[in-house]
Image (cartoon, rainbow, N blue to C red; front, side, top):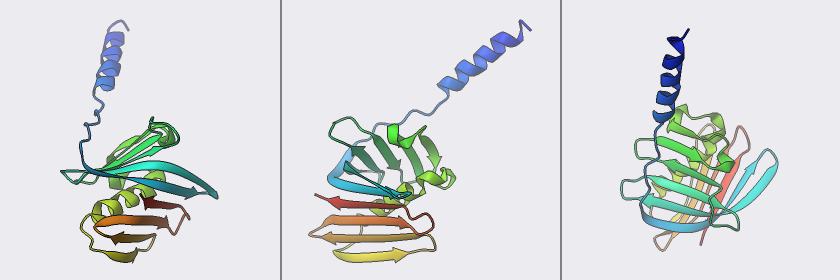
Length: 161
C-alpha cells in the first residue's frame, strides 16, 4: 500500500502538468462585432472581437460591458478547436470533429469566418444538411455573418462594426 501512494501522487501530478497550454494568439487583423447567440429559445447579445492570425487561426472573444472575456473560441488551420471562459462551461480543446456537440455551431461560425477572408464582395449563402451559412462582404470587409444549425435551431449572427 505504501508503494501505491507515491505512484498515484506521481500520476496525478504528472497528469496535471501534461495538459496542453494554449498558445498565445497574435492577431494579424481584427474587427469588432456585435454577436447574437440564439439557443433553446433564449437570445443573448455580446460585444465581440473577431481576429485572424498570420497562420490562419481565427478567434472570437465575447464580452459584456467589461474588458474581461466571457468566452474565447479559437479554430486553427489544422482544424484544432479551443473553447475557454465562463460561457464555455468546462471548456474544451482538441480536433474540431471530436468536440462536444454543444460547440458545433461555434465551430461552424469560426470556419465560416476563416473562409470569409478569401471571399469577394457580395452576399452568399451555403446550406448543408444541418448548417446554413450566410455572409455579406463589401469594401473588402465582412459586414455580416450568420450560422444556423437546422437540427437544433441554434443561430450565431454577427454584425461587424
